[in-house]
Image 1 (cartoon, rainbow, N blue to C red):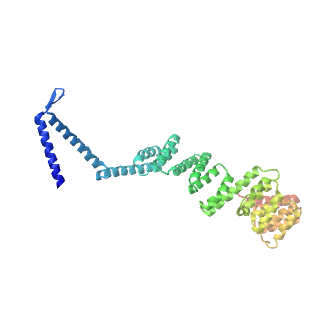
Image 2: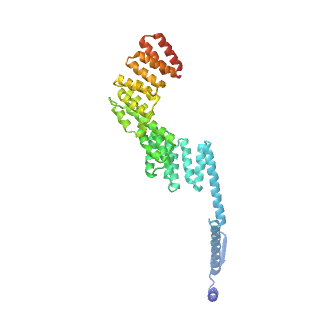
Image 3: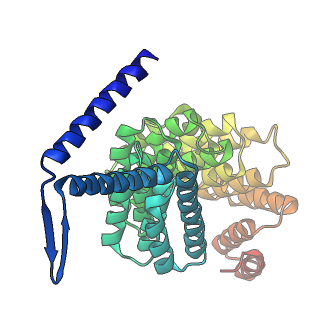
Length: 397
């Protein structure tokens, strides 16, 4: 109440002072524009100016409050922009799925600045550019994607690596993934793409070295991972076979580097033994196969054993004949014995073994072995019959 009284007295005194000033000298103001003039006193002109200023200030103050985000109108305008951006983003994605790359890129890029997910817009715009092989735009949109969202570098590099692999640029992809791997710890998708990159550049050793991490983070189902590891190990053996030294030392060294779970796998042992035989290391192959057969009785290994031909053929034949005590109904074993007997020129025994194999199972290798045996004995007519029967069972080329 006291403040109101003081303010009233102050306003009254100011009014009296203003009236006194006007009576003493009202002043003169002349405004001329073209043929028009305005004449008034200084005090009236000053009053009009203050009134106009207050009116303009009030108008802009009201407008700012109406369109601010805190107001209902501001929220409505903002939400309307977001809704339109979402609609445009959805339309861009539809165009992308339908393969309308140019339209998709244009719509997604235009909607990005108001989108709640600008990273998605720019990444998809980059992929659309990739589809039309516009590498300049790919780089431009990937850069915008990284700048649009904090912590987006992993997603950007993953997209880049995928696009590089799609173009068959596996070495460039590997460089991107190597950089990404340093920054993303053990990101599962990075490991998946590394598998594809190593396959693309035929780096079986690097792929085999990656297997422990693939197992640790369970990147692939167990069966798929086992197949991947096995194929990588076979590729390493093939690579060593191509660069082998005269004694097959490179092959043996490569096989020793494999983990026990692989070096005792019959499928891989058979592959390694075949490489040894091709390299002329038949004695080493014979010993390897014989040891593996003690662990795992395998028809493929038996077939190789009959062709390995170690240094001591009689001892090798004796080993195989001892197996008959427990496996006298095995067609593959009889075929193996027949081949070993032929090597030792025991043709009658070889014929008996091969005929026993034929009784148990009719297959092309047995007919071929019988044909060869009968040719060696001079019975060309029967040999021809066996060869023909074997050809009839052989798979088509």
